[in-house]
Length: 329
Image 1 (cartoon, rainbow, N blue to C red):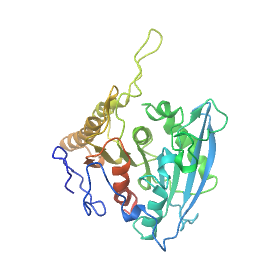
Image 2 (cartoon, rainbow, N blue to C red):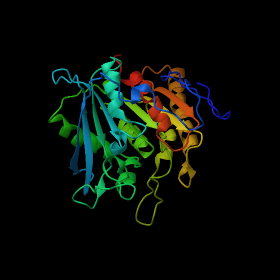
Image 3 (cartoon, rainbow, N blue to C red):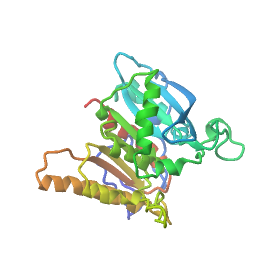
Image 4 (cartoon, rainbow, N blue to C red):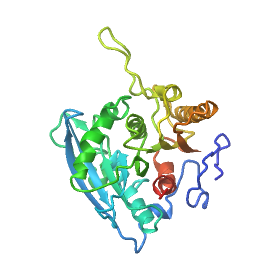
């Protein structure tokens, strides 16, 4: 694929469907056929919204949806895909539209049966998840705004959200539906702060998730809090490149996507932060090779585009990313 801005070079080693098939303006990534409902394709069931109150992340309520593939068989546990900001991930008018992508890829045999769990961040201080999050007067799928505990959950460099997911959310879903326990057949993804959240889960629980989809990831200082006279410093996501370089390699496969016109603000520069992540992952592998370390390596692919802080490029790439991560291997 050749991008339309000279300052950006696409370095991905995978081919996305219909790359460059139609002329486009910088930042525009029209959906591929795999992201649009196709005639004759059996549709999975999207169950929800359901509500869940966490004990690990106290005083929060969140919504979640379960995608059950059309070929679901409880005796043959399917792959698992967990996606943050579930209210946006399932939006049929949005650029991700993940249930439709799953329908199409499963029907074509490009990936095996895959169960999806799409989770909103928690909302703090309310007994019920509030309706109408988003633009004034929004209803249904138009209400894709952020609950008030999103940053506290997603941008924190600790294991709290990973524990919530593995100790509470997955067991709750497992009461009704089976799914694989093999981390190589489990993927977790998100965009922006949802992306760093997905990475943090795999970083802390590689035995639970071996694949990460990271779009416009917020590897920046959103979670940083300076030390006070009574509290220690709290680090932000901008510390991850250093942690990756100085920590043992986890058996994680990750796809990184970002655009040259992503955010640049008080928290950091998103495009540079994602490049730092890639550099750290590649260096960790090279260093392990040089030392003839027999342990795991990061399996990393990426694509840099010419977009801003938007899900559209990630949505365009999503079918190919899911083929790479979730196909039989």
